[in-house]
Image 1 (spheres, rainbow, N blue to C red):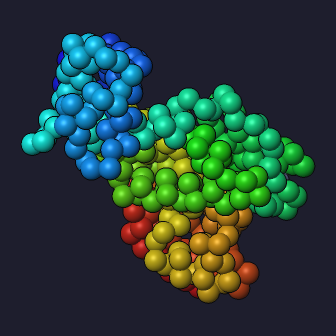
Image 2: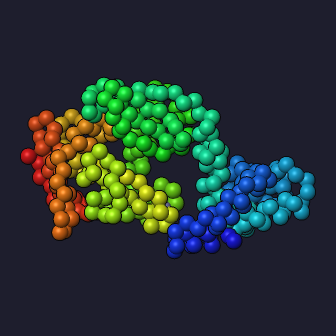
Image 3: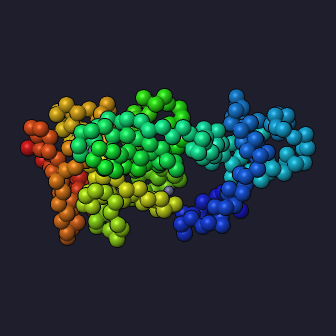
Length: 298
Ligand SMILES: [Zn+2]
Ligand SMILES: [Zn+2]
């Protein structure tokens, strides 16, 4: 079964465990990973069969040829003058080399201070556990968020720069979801007010919970409606006018944005939000997909 077959199966019927296992089985081989790595490192996009063979750790051309064939067409494609990585091949080997999948358990699990708590103003901390960054406040016992983060995001920054890196990672994640892009498979994601769906909310205020679900792979993300709306022009303008620059303030410190008044209306489902800033109030009405349908600044 090729990767394409697996992918179309995933698209139509959701992930099929045995078919996903085939993909992993395909990659769980040292020589195949080495082939992908040599193609990744090649200065030109394409390597001729003989050049590729020279660079791998086997002198058995039959064995080499067999494993190269196994990687084609899912991860390697034949080009005019040799072999090149496919999109999936680049994605997989990039992830392996950056340690996205392998280095999580080797990461120093140090706890880092990351600004102040939106509930009590004391210091919040970030810790890394099982591939997730957990942001919480010890002083008031608040759990702020749990975000899946590739180990490379932490490994590539000194401790003082980690909160900024996590913040940027979160912002990118939110942007991608808002554009309807899945973080895992880049398939199409749809937003839904959780309270208007059959799902269980996870936010501290259930009315503020927004669920993003990927139609292709089924991946689910929950976000606070305030975070979902962070890129809307009227939100950016209001934040800027009250002296909050969302580019330089940690998302979890944009307190008025994360803890608005919220009222859920039915028929049609609408969420009314009131964001209180010092001398300014922003009111938004969003539909069940969390699209802004009305706004007012007072
Ligand atoms: Zn606190
Ligand atoms: Zn997906």
